[in-house]
Length: 348
Image (tube, rainbow, N blue to C red; front, side):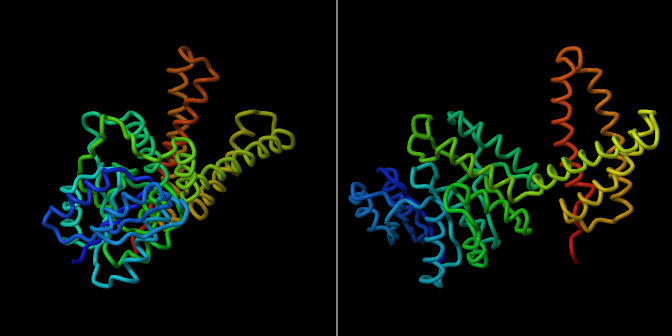
């Protein structure tokens, strides 16, 4: 027996028992480890039946999915030295045993970190489809990495990552996003295995995800751990520097608008370049190439803004056209700088 299946459970129903029975009948040598995350006495009958399939770990009060997963990982690491792989799965019956087996096979072929990426086909709740689409885009912007299913609970990892998983911060749903962010930033490849996800009646009825509170935790995690927030702060600082330069040069040097604007930009642009290189992206890219690329991008952005204003100012009005264009160019600028201009060189 070399694979443990961690199943955090809060207020579980019969789907948990069906899942455990399916794992038992799969013919695989899986060890289910169920974590009762403070469900309360009324759910004891479910857990007593589940105990026939594997150990039950208990939290006296609800601590969150992340805390439950870390309790399970710590238990396996300390008490089961023969376990080489851990797969995490939800207790609500969304993850098919066949897909759990596929992740186990992928880990046996190659150690590392894998996720079960849902296809989002058929009757998928709108909030699940929309939520993953938004989070996937935000993750790409923030981490500079693609992940087709950032919210999947079906994941697997080998024993060399047990300590890594225990060190990741977060006790609730944000923990799973923290793991992806830490993988992206730490150079841990995220392998994706296509899976199916079953929603009973087309609705994720047994989910304990709180759309507003838990979404806030997840997005706060993404931005706090990413370079995007530093990029935004740097942009604001350099904008203020630009305004200060315009005020100074227009008052003490020249009254020609194009000239004092150019002089102010000649001060703020090199500062912005250095801040982005050193503070935002911590880049080790070639200095000359990145400098040339940065100013080429700055010129392209100016031309793009002029062209987009011509197209959008009539249908939207100057105010809304300006808001839309600035937002799009801000995000586009960030992505290009992160992925191309200040992309880190791999250390040999």
